[in-house]
Length: 152
Image 1 (cartoon, helix red, strand yellow):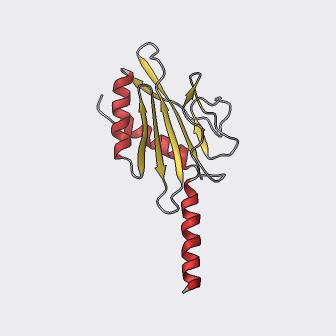
Image 2 (tube, rainbow, N blue to C red; image 1 turned 180 degrees about the vertical axis):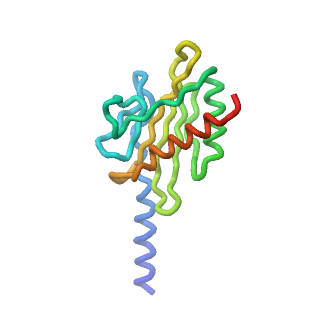
């Protein structure tokens, strides 16, 4: 009995530790936090020459408010997503993996409109581990596809 209890307690501690600590996130001087050297992050504000981390921003024709409403619609329908911060020009969401309960932080930044076109800057990064097997890039591309499929 003691052995089973010890194994269960250890498993719980390990699983709770998978969420990691929330890194410093947000927008500073008009930029999302750069990706670390590890391949478990994508960022549309990373230099385009950094192919490992760079991802295209999401383009939208309309107002920042319309873009945010549409994006929130997509995010509210996403599985295992928790919308944590919604501000005038910024959204942060936590996605939790189904089995190991790993948390990925996803950010969307809506800078000022340039000639009627908004470029929604994005960042998606794992809190723990080194590689994410492309999950963060796939997630942003899925969100992009669903956002672009919304009626305009």
